[in-house]
Length: 444
Image (cartoon, rainbow, N blue to C red; front, side):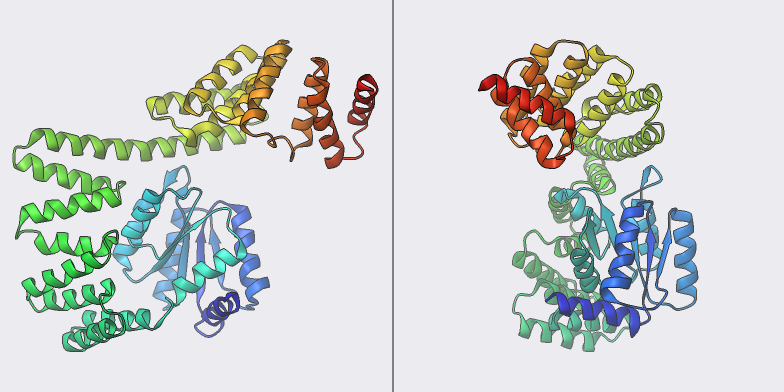
């Protein structure tokens, strides 16, 4: 199967003269994408155009489109400290057929649903493997299967006003796959174009019945009922909201419908959700900017503390498990200044959000160790091992810290495996070898 995808992508570059415009600040992903295209796929063309800013990316899109070139846009969800949602919406509005692949650092279902809803072709979660990139590219270039080919053709016929041909294609799709939501929606779109609203609604309802969690039929029903039956429109808008809850504009629209009806409690609930959604997005931007700044000044613990504290303060009650990395970075910045008490308080706050995070327990232990309280440091380390007995095994430094502390506490049966692991990772660690030999002598 991998060979099939490789050939589709190879043909895109070599036969279609296709290109990729990458808008990303991620040097590692750029390198991975370049290796995938030129080493794995083996194309010889100059077909990857990488930019780090939205402005430069949009200029490249504009020039490539004006020249009539075929291209796919890869764009980060977060760019320059902000989200790229507005950029994607702008691109899809100006170039509705443009294929866009969004690069994300998380895979929450609601995030993925929202991206597909605003028209992206695919989503790649990072870090991504070469096989994953090739597969996503292949499906973006050429949706797989006969049905996809028919649907592409049917949409072309509909867009050019050839309604009867489009209807014939829709029926062909439904012959090949009875109950196909895509075929039923195409059939409904043709009926709408012919002002046959009742028939269109029937097709859209059938499409929705065939796949209750597919967003497109529900969106069709919302638009078909708009201005005709407000109750039905509202019902399907709320269905969309449950399936794709990050669309603040839709929440606002639902609130407006309730406000127009003087149903103010319902209106307020949706308006509050809309504000909360936008605020979360803004907080994500603040977090991204602060982390970027803190990373840039990571060799200055004081400045790191300042900016990481700002983002945690700004997020306030909206902190969740996704923010644990911020607490860990702030703890390291505090410890770097000798502020071990403040570091302990910081890790305590993080553990209230994620009490079973072994990394937080370990880092809190290191803060107690800095303060000279080895007994409490040991309790934290034991808690970390309780939640994940193997958490130290990939790190020489963590293994050494555990082994050293447990040895100091005369917990030899705990110290020995940690020091053995140090030597497994680095046989040349003289200090670990000496400590291990001494402990083995001590236990006979």
